[in-house]
Length: 93
Image (tube, rainbow, N blue to C red):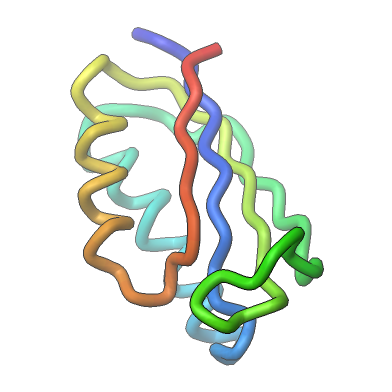
């Protein structure tokens, strides 16, 4: 099992219930894939360094998890097809 860090930015224009649902969805992807979520840290709304698709603000979330080597690819795939995710980055610790 490897330790990973996932930082992703959600569209800030969606409501809080939708943000919570997306965070829960990505945590569920980790647990369904046999991994464990160690910590989810919601940094909140912050200004982006540059505009992405004409958006200047984003909702930052940092998630630390432990899983096998194939789960980060599935997470990136799930985030890639979710329109509310602006950017994502998975790093192995």
